[in-house]
Image (cartoon, rainbow, N blue to C red; front, side, top):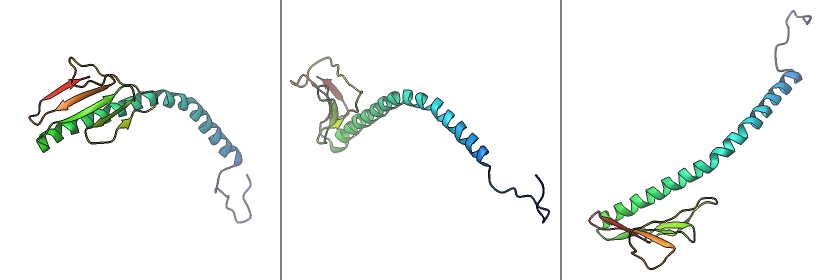
Length: 127
């Protein structure tokens, strides 16, 4: 490149070819990475729901001890929801299902399982 009359060359900015190359590389990386990210999402959703349910269970236990009265945590397998006693149900996200297995029945409703937390800190489960 020949120098302009002032003796300086202009180094400002990028050429159109440089910008197109960068855009092409970004498009290629996006195309390669997006399937990997999409495959990780179901596992993330399941982990997040499990963490939320564990928090609700622990909160129900702490509330039973703190208020000195029995409280419960419920899972509705048919409806796909869970809740603490006195709270609104939380629906499970699409594609996430739950089940409930118990040794004995505390509740007559078949699709709903319960973990009862007693004021002494003990707990019992039933379905």
